[in-house]
Image (tube, rainbow, N blue to C red):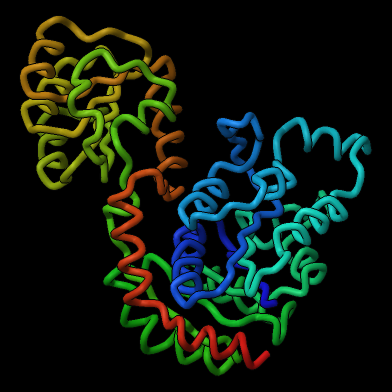
Amino acid sequence: MKVIYISSTVGFSGKGLITLGLGRYFLDKGLKVGYFKPLGKIPFKTEENIVTDKLAYFVYQSLGLKEDVKNLCPVILTYELMVKRLRGEMEDPMPQVKRAFETVAQNKDIVLVGGAETIWLGSFLGISGFKIIKELNAKVLLVNKYTGEVFLDGVGEVKGGLGEKLLGIIINWVREEQKPDIDELVIPWLEKQGIPVLGCIPYDNFLTSITVAELSERLRGRVICGQESLYNFVQNYLIGGMEVDKFVEYLRRTPNACVIVGGDRADIQLISIEQGVQCLVLTGNLMPNEIIISKAEQRGVPIILVRENTYFVAQRIQDIAARLSLKEKEKVDKGLTLVRKHVNFERLEKILNEG
């Protein structure tokens, strides 16, 4: 049995989509595939009232797996768990992780292990990526966004710690302006360090988009109109805190935008609706006037009301935008198409079988 641990040196690098692509590849080859996530961060309750990790459950369902969900993600990192660990009230979770893994791995040809946010996360619990890799005797596939010297340092450090256990790296979300440096400098350097580059996936704005409905849910907002357009995709964000003329200039250059604006800025709200934004997020729990609501209803523009101030909402949206959501089928299909096109699965499998 082969075990591949999918990890990153920085968070939000697209590991879930790569894991899904790997799983589909091996399933299509007729192999018995298992999936396991030792440490999760997004608690989610299934219809059977089993608490697991939300992303792990999505991958599990998407791959059509049938194992007991209780073993899917044995440790969920919550604030309460952190407090217990810091107070010395928590037992070593590694035995629990290994028991769950052994159950998932029974009769499998290959098990894909979804790493936590980074390879270091979980160190204070005693279940960092490095420790799990050793305990499960896994080989490692890195999935990273290119971030210049931070990327190079992180990948170099992981190679030093893992040695031959590192199968290679997939560089994800490569922007057009980064491509010359990556092709001419970064890839040759990585290969010389003994780190096979198994794919470079181009950045796609649609994959980082989110539906208006999900945005509202994550902001804990209240939709006051435009319900018929809740499944429009938001790809860009603008804060309406500037003068109207300057704002219009930015808005015209920003397609599929969500505008975050104070509830008292009727001028910005009206311009946004007339320009056909995907939605308005009104901060400070201030209801818009009747003219704004009427215009938004005519144009089918959802208005989301939130309690927090503009700065807080902007920070929250930055976090949301950084984490790729895989809830929508269109995004999964588009993402998997990119993965199949740009990842060298044959080379990955060859290196895996040679080890």
